[in-house]
Image: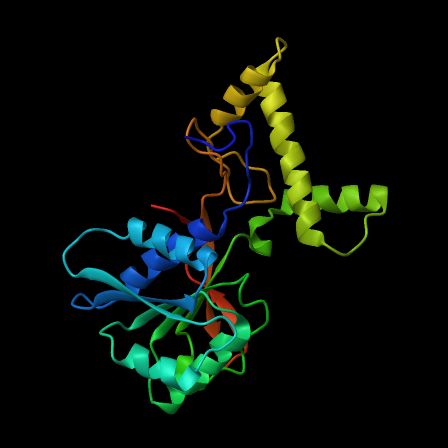
Length: 254
């Protein structure tokens, strides 16, 4: 059942992004080692996130997961690195904050460990360019949107609007999301026709498939789908060149 049948969202939440990370981790795993390590601080929010991703994992033989947790704000990075070493997994989905991740990367490097690390960009807002070089191209971050989502036409449309209304240069992502939401509403109203009511508008938006806003990934909705861009971008951290590299195009949740 939907929490609110009249609400439609553009971008994915943490659970959709984490599912994409799990898919990528399994794709990168060797055939005989498809064990994922879920790591993060204790707490209900992370409990729920891990539970959703575990449910998403395929039930194929050889695929498994293990959860390693630590007390919020009290990560013993050296000890936690040893706990990871004792597992059979080579892929860590880390749901802690940036400071914890950086401490853990250093501890793992001190033990000559370099498992692939998967994290949500919202939890790791600053660059990881100073991470140990052993993790070069072994850290993967999920993003709900990238600047590359904007087409040339979409960018020009936003710039015209920004100039016309003297929009401030701050909070660009929020402005783009608001414009995309307005375009989505406009398309729903147009498709609903002249005999407009709430139900017809909802049905019109539900019928949209890969609707191109020019500002976001293509948006698809349905009777049981209220997130238009249901997936994530994945970037790998190029430590040596201090940049990020996109792993393929937009990854839709399978």
